[in-house]
Length: 202
Image (cartoon, rainbow, N blue to C red; front, side, top):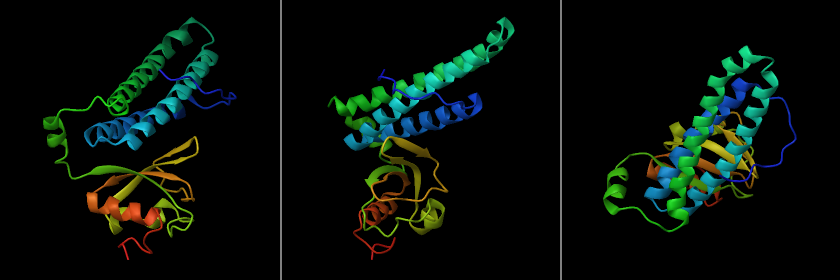
């Protein structure tokens, strides 16, 4: 398990924390499988970054649960929440282990890779350049699903993560994680890098 970031405690509801943990664990699994199957170190490294975020959320969740327990009855009622949090964290740890297959150059059997490469959807990681035309626009405004068959599922801005970032404005230096068809992701990657003036690749 990675080291928990030093964070100043701020009250976040248990419900909101669990939602963030669920979303992050789902993203980690998707990224980890893609990283392993396509031997993509960049995706594997993003999984490790997300694991650090998850460890911080586990710390916040446990602190909130301790603060919420006023007596034995409260402690018993919150035990189930703590268990869900623990199991969600176990999912993230498993995803990090999968990413480790790539980062440690262990490799994966070609038969397994062949089976999963038949899927129509893939994942990509791309950094937004200063001169990309997609900067200053929200993910919703870009309407990538309709335009090119791709969808931005997360944005990393430094150490800050935005999951399901429909209303977020894309900024230079943002790291985009996107899901979609191979051709759609190629177009998005070229646009993010400033290599094209529109999503059609022109």
